Image 1 (cartoon, helix red, strand yellow):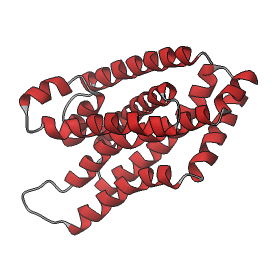
Image 2 (tube, rainbow, N blue to C red; image 1 turned 120 degrees about the vertical axis):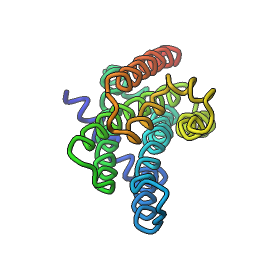
Image 3 (cartoon, helix red, strand yellow; image 1 turned 30 degrees about the horizontal axis):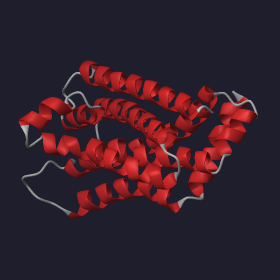
Image 4 (cartoon, rainbow, N blue to C red; image 1 turned 90 degrees about the vertical axis):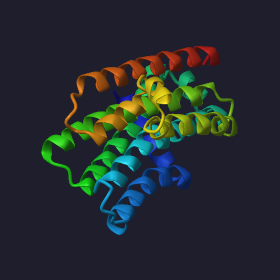
Length: 227
């Protein structure tokens, strides 16, 4: 537990020193707040910009953040030194995921406050958002582990983040894409945040399946690195 806490603190300090990562955590809720208060159109739902930005944040912002921090540790040999010092793979992963998951949860609460949801809506919103951010962080961690350096991480992570983040928007206009997107965690986030009357069982099951797949992918990538 002490080692996980140390990794947690390390990642927190690294993020605070990285403006590019910090921007990813603030730009989406800021856009949601500005658009919600400035754009008033009768034909659109009052929280459209909140749910839209929240879905994109959960599906896109955290992938590049997580992949970037792990690829940086690999490039600077920090991860290898940690392993030599006796830090186990699961301890490193828990410390990294724990910090970014906490940060993602805080931003999710900010989105909920901007949206002014009811109590039940807030609980459903946070359930899919926090589980969705966990999936994104694990996917980003796998991408970071597969990368040789930060440049490679950006080259791999950004296209994946764009696809994962924007596919639900495309799915709303295309039935074929919609049927495929149903197996993606971002689509399930998008479905719930746009209709809180739906049951959470299936969306959370799909997100859990995605988390399992990304965890296996991370383990495979880790073993491939032979750290």
